[in-house]
Length: 111
Length: 112
Image (cartoon, rainbow over all chains, first blue to last red; front, side, top):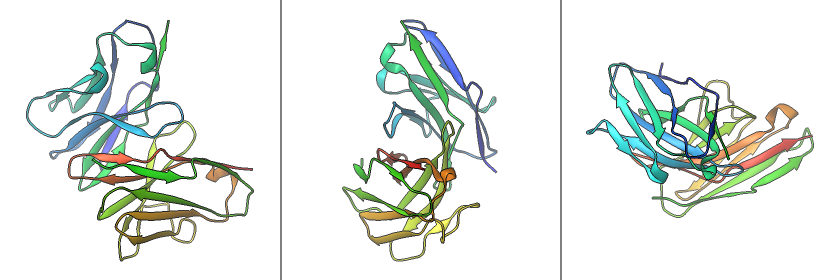
């Protein structure tokens, strides 16, 4: 069965520092990969997605992610974070029309 | 894209009662999905709701506890029945295109 592992449950970081949120998935077939963000008391918002093509995907709010098939990873990065990036981030994989989510990573940006 | 309106946004309910959550989409969709997000946890798919047929439940979820209605292509409800404190969670509805999922704002349920 498909699974998604987010390696860090919490990531504290200072404002303007770079950040990487790690995500690994298990699949032997082609998958679609997603990163969603959940701000406090909000629903989920799509940050970016990988469907095919270029392995470097750019999303909203300055985030990007790199699909690495050999390492089955889809890590999310931002070169300089803001206080407003404080939120829960979920990596997800889609296969056969179903979304499977990772456990989530709480990004906490401090001044 | 799709805009999803979900209500109520939050509720506090007595144990043993039931709560029905509504989800309205601004376009016609074949499938709607209901997720549960327990405190500090990720999202878990409860069931898939197709218009005109019975919902398909994931392992660990049953129709008696989470009955779902899908009367048309833009609307669905999820009922949390005979609630206990363990049902305290955020419940989200979702619709998916071939390449993206869209979520409602969620219903934050607290059972006391």
